[in-house]
Length: 409
Image (cartoon, rainbow, N blue to C red; front, side):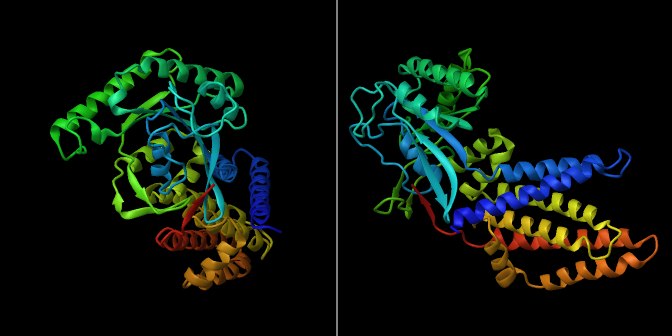
């Protein structure tokens, strides 16, 4: 069995568990304490599991606007070839970004609007619009990044908006989805006076903000785009990379600016079930921790619920499965595989003192239930405390260690 097959099997197993627990909770009488809260937490867990698919980001904009450079800046490595003369990108293609062997992010790199000459790479489509729609029919994006070079905001941008409006309209017809659009201004360091970033020069600061406001206004003027447009962010994407495919950014040649804020904005406006993938891809600890804490709270409540069981020992397998999923998911957020091996690594290398937690669950489940009237309640509390401690330990272990090297294809 391959690693990907193991991951799929693990996902199916955990989703089955969440579904079965939800059936049990749904069958409880309406007066049962916390029924609605448990239903909500189980629904959230199922969404988390279903959201382990990669996020899909479509990058569109004028030729030579810096789309490929933006993709590289977001991923932190050389995923797309950057042109310095003839346009490079031909056929619109979903590029797969991998993290430690896991399929994490799909980015649609596209031909530029208003291209004056044919791109270097082959494309059977006659126009950029046709090329983009061929790719969109294969997979629907989750978010659209509409890229414009800062200096070009006032230069023939209406034609770019026409094409964007057509694309958004067709996606609506195909998938019945109202996709969020985030405007991205690139090469903001080239605005007058050139070579300065925001916070470095007040004149440049004002100039950049004026371009942001203008581009946002242009986007919102279009009836077909108005409800889709969320924000416009200024950026600088320039960095130098190691030679070869998937080269990492050279430590002393990283001039990117506002990219973390862009990714945070992408997370903010994408469907909730795929935010874990984006947080994991970008290594933004704040979002990773937020998602992880949410999962720990949900799993703690579930373990408390299933521990209220009149048969001594019967809750242990279910509680252990929930805890395994919890640790596995937190490990996945950090960049590791969603697999049993991730849990094994955690217990071998990072779960100091967790053996006591596991023992406490067993003792509570088998012994405390023999206390008339109080046993189940005490067992529930012990299981919840142990699960919370296990989750906190997993967050500390997985989300503070250095991440493994990324790859893409």
